[in-house]
Length: 166
Image (cartoon, helix red, strand yellow):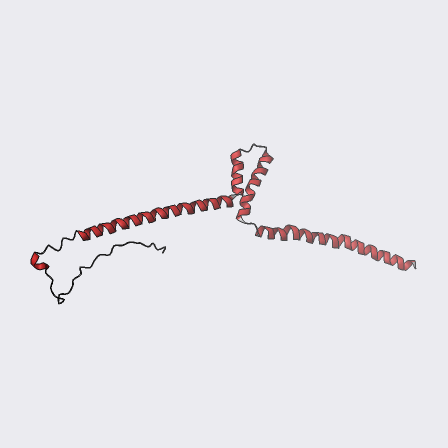
């Protein structure tokens, strides 16, 4: 009876020895590999440029505390600017869109003014048509319908001008 119990105790000791000397350290090594290599590589793959820019103020603070140097407020404001770069980018883009809109409006008004000036000048030149001299009173009488009406190509004033984006 003691022989069976003693053999089982040695087997149990051998199992515990194997479990705590081989299996647990191997599992711990596998866990360390998973955390420090696999998951770290996956996290680094997800890092974007925005994340790097947002981390720059943290690096500035760590550097300043390690070297015990005072940080000027401008450097901290630069850190805030880098942290909120997406907000500042949207404000900048909206201001640029507003400026482009104003420039296009002024350009449209200038083109409309130029077209109206040219149209008015051409209309007034047409009124001052001196190609046809005054005929004497004998030429004013009406003749029959056998005479064809002649048109010297009446000018049509331009009222609109279209801008094409291409």
